[in-house]
Length: 466
Image 1 (tube, rainbow, N blue to C red):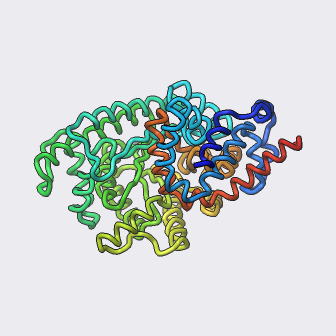
Image 2 (cartoon, rainbow, N blue to C red):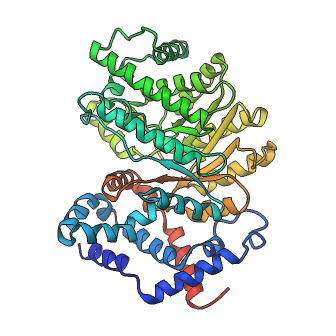
């Protein structure tokens, strides 16, 4: 608790020296060109790209990454924040959050704040990928349709905001903001695996989206009604995004929901991806069945004759997935170790890059990874396959506030790189950040390199070196 309170005090009241340093470095970052310094092979280890950051951004990053290096602090962060809110009061607590954790990982709450954040990223060669931090898990289903209907309006606003953010806009979407997680689990449990069945079920969902009378016999009347309302909400969002020329990247979630999420995402693709991949699906390579599912989905897409967008991630729900497997008595769905996950990721990555090398308009990929080896492998394969880094067929993605030594280096080298950017009020976003932090503890504990590069950059500025 003492550590957290110290962090709040430092975050809320940066010293005059730090503030002056931030102002000076902000000016130098905008006027000193880095492109010439960064010519040659990609280098994620020299930290030169941190010259683009203001002094306060460097200090804040060091502070936050130090906090995140304590597993106990991350594990109990929700309780600590609740206690801090009571001790500090709402106003001081929110001020501390805005200067620290919220400021590091969130774009802002108001449209001017979000636009300012997007503008600063674009000046550094980074593109925005807005994410509304709304989701639902089992047992959290709402009564009636009102909550999901309100979320549809929020998602439409996200499409509009993304469209105004510059060329090649992207946004993230969680299906469980528009469809009950309990229904997703029920639907997933009843879906069979063969690819032909999958294609028929995709077509069935499309028919529901088009307001034809169609239902699933294994669902109750109430569940079928909610499914109809949910997939029509998703259909409207998908069509609005296509009309606004915004790519929608649908997030994967837990294994007990993913078959249903994939099914409705494929149906959105069938509706919207006739000529370009506007709707993308996410594949979690830490799952043992990912490559098989990706291959089956590719077969379905090819038979449907539509385009295919893929977001490739390693995954973030390992601890909960393994705990559920033990408790429920089914086989562990996670790869046996880190190396197996790496091999799974590279196998799926190479498969998609080979397809893009043949037809970069039909197939698109975002390499959503903080792993430097995966990123470097992808850039080498792009060169071998003659995939233009400016074409938009392949891009890279990382979380806002993390892995900036990779993101900024890629952006300065001319690759298309996106930051996943949550936005909203402090109270609405903090639960989302806590959940993401707890799910990504292995990533947070592995940020020593970025922390060291930030420390080196701060030392360089304090010593007045160029």
